[in-house]
Image 1 (spheres, rainbow, N blue to C red):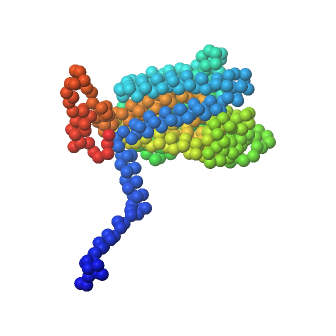
Image 2 (cartoon, rainbow, N blue to C red):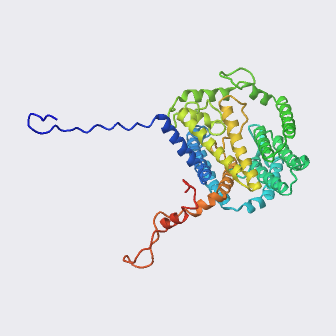
Amino acid sequence: MPGSRTGRPPVQRASRRPAAPRPSREKAVLRFYLRAQKAWDRPLTAYYLILGGSLLITVLGLVMVYSASQITALQLSLPGSYFFRKQFLAAVIGSALLFVASRMPVKLHRALAYPILAGAVFLMALVQVPGIGVSINGNQNWISLGGSFQIQPSEFGKLALVLWGADLMARKQEKKLLTQWKHMLVPLVPVCFLLLGLIMLGGDMGTAIILTAILFGVLWLAGAPTRLFAGVLSIAGLIGGVLIKTSPNRMARLACIGATEPKAGVADCWQAVHGIYALASGGIFGSGLGASVEKWGQLPEAHTDFIFAVTGEELGLAGTLSVLALFAALGYAGIRVAGRTEDPFVRYAAGGVTTWITAQAVINIGAVLGLLPIAGVPLPLFSYGGSALLPTMFAIGLLIAFARDEPAARAALAMRQPRFGRKRAGGPGAERGPRRWNTMRRRASAARSSGER
């Protein structure tokens, strides 16, 4: 090999290694999907979704109640924070009920089923007594507690039907009686019709629809055959059709589906149209908290039934999609709890609560969007109203208790330890043993599936 001009041998340059191939976008998406699936399969996922989702909905609801109710309070010569303070008090009491319900054992929940049902029936019958029942917006479904505090017993009827129906169907399943159609329907359907009759005496068809949805949810979980399910649905649909046909107010609400402009006559569709206006003017990110225009007297019930419209105007599409995502997560977690349990009572109760919350959210949001008739039901955990908030938060406590009671969730909660170990007794120079959390992790590594905490 000839040398260079300097007499030194030529320097051999190292060949460049081929660059490592960059991970493709498909592999990145696949990895993200696998990580997300691994996170969803953790035993405490349902527990965190129910607890976090319900608290976020409640807190955001308090913010929107304060924003949407200020103008209404001032028009009534009340302080601007009047409705917010009442809702905040109800949320505090509801949080206590949620905590108590989440710590109660399943046997105690079953023991409370009959007392709650008897109390709800008594109060719903008491509403129809002259001088005791109070009529609001044409519906006599309220009892005055003195001052500005009122209670709506029909809201507690939802909780009573869930607990009592779940206990009834669980006992019948344990005795293997659900294979006979008469045991599946009696006495569940007659008691439900009793509650529906008491509610319809006051004219509240929206709450009656929610109770019917809970009944169908429990029957579906009990494995009702298609013909039986269709028969009950046909009877309920026929009764509902007669009640709508014989009421001009309900016919007017039905005529406002899809309305985009106010009309003349009985069905003026003022509320439905201005709800659409509020959503349309919000844009992507909204006009900002407190900057709603429709709540200045144009949109009736801005802080109750149509609070979702004000949310769309002030927080935009981003805010409304966030609320929808929270309700979807709550519904998914409830279905997961009902599907993974071996206890029939837990399955029926979790399914009933999930049906209650999701059906009510769909009916409320569908009415605001102009896709369903205005039924007069509040958005769960979000709209103003202590009578609706208290039983709903107790029902959320039920779901949390059921999610904690899963075997895998119990094991995961038992293995959660403080991040830093406790110090041994003695002075600062005392010898410290190994950190407890580290020891527990090594001890449980073999018994714990990957990704669980």
